Amino acid sequence: MSLNVEQRPKLEIRLCGPRGFCAGVDRAIQIVILALKKYGAPVYVRHEIVHNRYVVEGLQSRGAVFVEELHEIPLEHREQPVVFSAHGVPQSVPADAEAKNLFYLDATCPLVSKVHKQAMRHERQGRHVILIGHSGHPEVIGTMGQLPEGAVTLVETVEDARNCEFADPDNLGFVTQTTLSVDDTAGIVAELQKRFPHLLAPAAESICYATTNRQEAVKEAAPGCDLFLIVGAPNSSNSKRLVEVAERAGAKKSLLVQRADEIDWDGLGDISVLGLSAGASAPEIIVNEIIEAFKARFEVQIELAVTTVETENFLVNRQLRDVDLTVQDMAFVNGE
Image (tube, rainbow, N blue to C red):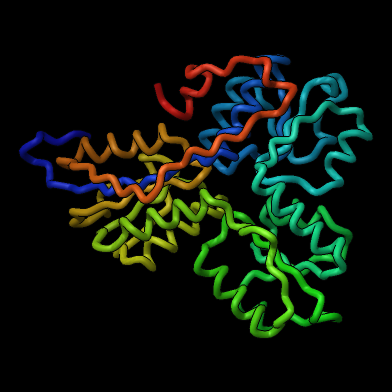
């Protein structure tokens, strides 16, 4: 549907920056693309490489095969690469891959790997580890799987922090999932520190720079927005946190959408200011698709809400650095 210019209501779109892919997600997708170029299809991927259906389907169309567990890889393909997702995996997974003589490429985000090391350091120094995060999230499963069973206690809420008990309350250390709400996590940490004064923080912030940056940009843009759209998947933790941040920061309403065709155009109501951002696993091509869909219905003026410029870049695995990555290779997520 497209309206004549004179029929279109005016709409200001506050476009957040940074938004969309972080360096860890970009690297993970590059690893799958480069593995396909170097080794040919199929390349197996354990779990969704990142939490985004569009990205997963785009990689499937290029020859990636997604499995939940390694035993699903057919015997005749055991020499093909298997990629571990950006969320990280328990230590049992690479051990299982080696036992099966599989060739694997680890696409774990370096910032998730940093949290693994922080947790292991606490445990090595005799502390019980508190992990602040969401039960069942792949990153949480991966972090807990770095340590012996019983060495980690998961705390999800302030109430959990208020009620948890430990055999040795003077020897505790905490780490967090990288994609949490900065404000929510601060409340949980404050409660834990009140109850356990000797609780040791990790040597560096666990919540990653990209999560923090995207939340800060949304906070900046949200006041006065009639609607705030976050592009992202329902199983993306960092995207869901952005929806919450937008509403807390002053947006009248905030929604998570995966594609333009998910937007209830008839139910938008009378909006004149729209906030728009994207979670760290959402491709820019979908942000552009949504902007174009609004331009077909509104006279759009775009205002940039940029709080910082990200320059981080994480190198791919050594085995893949001899393969050229072209703009065209990534056009399905970044656009032309």
